[in-house]
Image (cartoon, rainbow, N blue to C red):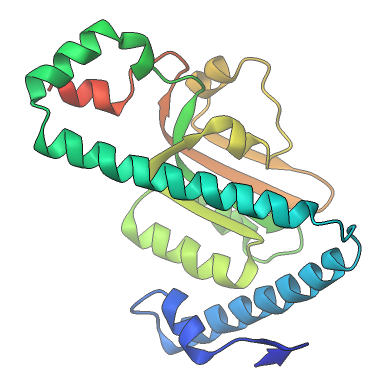
Length: 217
């Protein structure tokens, strides 16, 4: 497929397509992916034609690339040192003397987030499904999101910033820690969309992170 000199190949689609999808779900995923790709191409061309051609963007890209390369290298070197040279006793001793480095600076959560148009069908089902974390319900949500959701993010398996998630929702807690302690399920709406958030786990600001808990067994 070509859009203004930009090409989308079959291999590109196969690389991102989830495994074990039915024929119907594969078709829905393909249509959704192609639509997003076309939109991204056209949006990029529009943005590129409306920003100053003074080299500032190229400079930012190059600076970011350098920082990313250095960060990736340092991470690799640190991982090698920890795995080959540093014993658990040394890690624990370092932790005991640097506890402040192992605390969460902002609240973190695990869970699931969906953004769905007000006109989407089956909202009552979504309202029930998003509160559960069983494999069959997650499967239903993923299939539903392929056809209807504007945004779908499954992150039960990783910690992410609560503030980043709430930036996507028309809800602004005054005290994020207190709000997350009292709310496991968040549903909101504005003039165009429903927002559903399941907070499966929560780490308040100042809590010990996973590394410190691992060191203490």
